[in-house]
Length: 140
Image 1 (cartoon, rainbow, N blue to C red):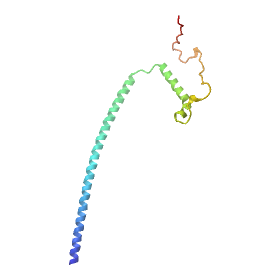
Image 2 (image 1 turned 90 degrees about the vertical axis):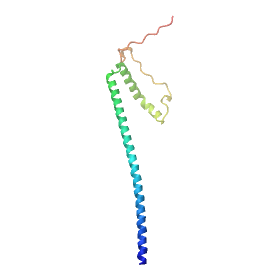
Image 3 (image 1 turned 45 degrees about the horizontal axis):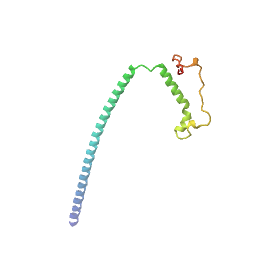
Image 4 (image 1 turned 30 degrees about the vertical axis):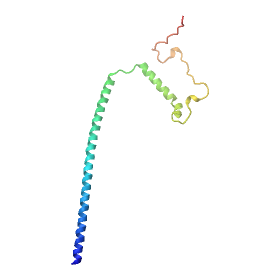
């Protein structure tokens, strides 16, 4: 009988350990659940704030688009100048690319005279509807 009483006491102690561990795990699960709920509510708030920001940005973009639709295009001479500018940029980009990437010398450091543009005759200008340049007057 002594062995069965000792064995019964061991089973009771083991049972109490299991119940204690179960209580700890339940408490950890409760804390973790509360943490996840807090995170979920914060995430929902952030999503709602992002949605309202996006809606506001879309409204602003729509207003800008409506204003731009009402404007006239720039004058054709300005458009021609812009096109010539970008053509010039594209023409000289290969010469500047190595310098801008830090792989080569400055493009104007080359020896020799700088390249010159060919002069155009007055009647061959691209924009003939521009007024002529004023003549210089000498001081009297």
